[in-house]
Image (cartoon, rainbow, N blue to C red):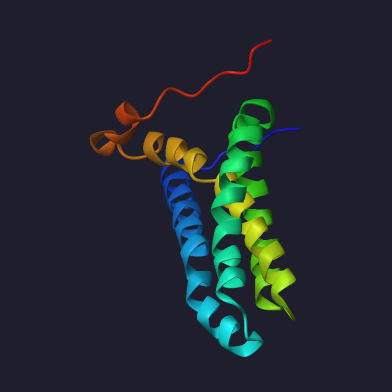
Length: 146
């Protein structure tokens, strides 16, 4: 099976889009929390729990699966993150109650843990040579051990 390889410019913009998507999906749902709180008459504790589930899952996923890309590859890890984000966004959008919001936000936390560091490597390495300043700030990619 051959892998399709994007050109330098397409890789750069794809990685930039993944980073932008990660930032958007981590922040955008916060704007709807007051709406849910008013509509469902949520307590302060419940609203705080909705906020808290995201960073808890980001940290837990990074601790447990932080080196996942070393085993399955950077592209596959980014795709898993995008799939988890889509699931989380869908659950968050159609949520009939707070449990769905919590599960959707958990998927978004998992998604964010799968994506942020990984898109930066191809983003920086696919930039035009004159703009490749980011790799100096990032550690070199780890190779899976045999």
